[in-house]
Length: 194
Image (cartoon, rainbow, N blue to C red; front, side):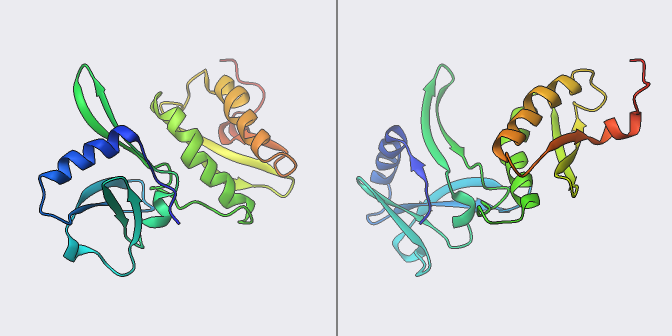
């Protein structure tokens, strides 16, 4: 069962919108390009005749949300909210798993680390225009990662890596990962002066 949160303000918003639609119209929550970096979460009207037998129905007060079979794993932990600020009101859709399907706890370590990087670490780095990429996990449990974007060659990289990313990954995979190394550390060697 998909685990989608539709906040109370968003539910009220949908009820108002649906009052202006033909009777029996509900909403559909979906992901376009699921599992890719361009994945987008969307919401549309769902007339009665557009409901598929494979859809999952989530009942809310006053309407139902339908999710198609393909989108479902990518909408795990998604949140739909209706926010009002000085710019006006807007619907916000957060789907942390849209770009990457949730991985199971018994998936290979590489997949689970990659998943955490994509869903938790990269969104934090995105604010600085950077991202990291998992290259490999060595036999002794070292995750080798590469910084890209705004992080590349930034002197704060070591601080970010050592404090943030490494701590987060090691805590999350304690007993499985022994260290996190940045690929550039391997290349630069110990004698750089900057």
